[in-house]
Image (cartoon, helix red, strand yellow):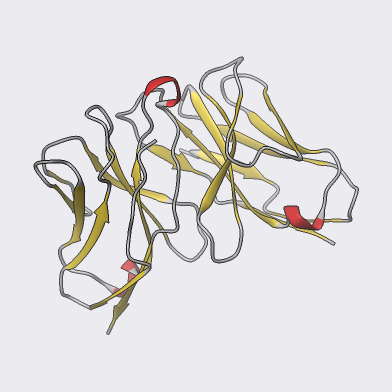
Length: 112
Length: 113
């Protein structure tokens, strides 16, 4: 499985955009990038995923670089309720392509 | 929709006791997973089941056994609990394949004394 690298923590002001980076330089051509978040020890919550193109849903946008070696999750107008640990995951390929492997993630703190 | 339901939500065991954590999903998903999360750490995969009738080891399988009882249910058993197994346990399910999201339960908080 491709590994991901994320900063351990980030701060963001309420109402501003939060841009969370993720490095996945060893990603394979058929592997997807997933983002999950975990609020205060609750079960992780799916946010968004993508393969090559940029993606947007009601929660966030996902920007994937053209070489696919990194991506950025954007929360356009962060609120206090967005304070959470954000996990960037590259979904495994081959026989274990359904497996999710979590790293330590980025603790995003949204400040008033 | 209930989604993924885990029971119990909290449990205290004595060292050496056994117990089974239950997980059920109502989304007709093929794949199910068990994770553990220690304080300040990310989730680590214990076991997973790609489909009914199959199970495979994850990163930290030692001390655990699993049963995929049917498509809905995936249980995790601790045969002889140890303090090192004190953790929060999460069950998840997803469709088989790389382009699908996983849904998580709310966790079981297990303390082994």
